[in-house]
Image (cartoon, rainbow, N blue to C red):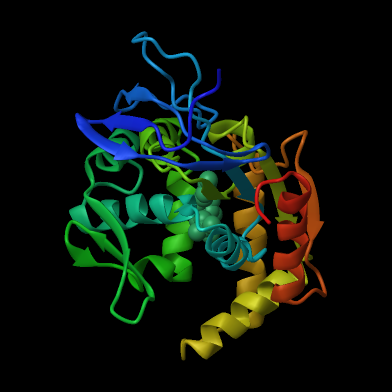
Length: 280
Ligand code: DC
C-alpha cells in the first residue's frame, strides 16, 4: 500500500507534515530525514528504518547563458507552482564577493573554496517582498548584481574545488513541495534527474540589449558595446571550462526566447511543466 496523505516526516528530530504534488496526485511519505542525505537527483534518500517509499521532491532545472532571462522566468515559475527557488548564480557571485571582501588573493582557489563552505548566507525578502540577500549579516543584494560581480562569479565558478564546495548547499534547496533551480549545470550535474529540464537561450544581441535596459532602469551607467563584449567573454568562459561547462542536458527542452515577451516565455515553460503533470 502506498503512503497515506499527510504522514509524518521527521527532520532533525522535529516532526513536520509534508504533502507533495506529483503527476499521480498528492502523496506524502514517512521517513527520517538525514541532514545532507539528498542525492544528486534531489531525491531525499531514506535511511534503513523501515522506509518503503521515499518522498520525491519534484525539481525543474532551468539553465542557460547570461542574460537569457533565467532569473525572471525561474522566479515566475516558482511563484506559479508555490515551490522553492535556487538561484545558483547568486552563490557563485557571493563566493567572489566574499573573496574580495576577505582580502584573499584573487587566484587563491582553495581559499575561495573554503569561503564557499563557510560563508554565512541568508536568502530572504525585504518588507516590500523584494529579494534580500545577506552575506555574513551584511545586505549584499545590490553588490552581487553588478557586472563586475558577475565576472568574478564566472572566474571562481571555473574552479572545481569551489563547485564541489557549493554542491551540498545547492542540494539542500531541494525541499518539498518542489524546487525550481536556475543556473548553468542544474540539469547536467547538480540535479541530473530533475523532472523537467529547460535550456533557456536567446541571441547574444538580445541578451546584451536586455542587460543594457536592466542597468538603465536601475539608473546605472551602461555601454551596449562593452556589455556585448562582456557577455561574449562570459559565454566563452562558462561554456569552455573543464568542469560543468554550460551546455544543455541531453534531455533538456530548448526554449529560445529571442523576440518573445517574458509572459510568452513563462507560458512556454509552464506548459512544459503542465504536460508533465507538475502543476495545473
Ligand atoms: O546566473 P548568473 O549570471 O548570476 O551567474 C554568474 C556566474 O556564475 C556565471 O557567469 C557562471 C557562474 N555559474 C555557474 O558556473 N554555474 C551555475 N550553476 C550558476 C552560475
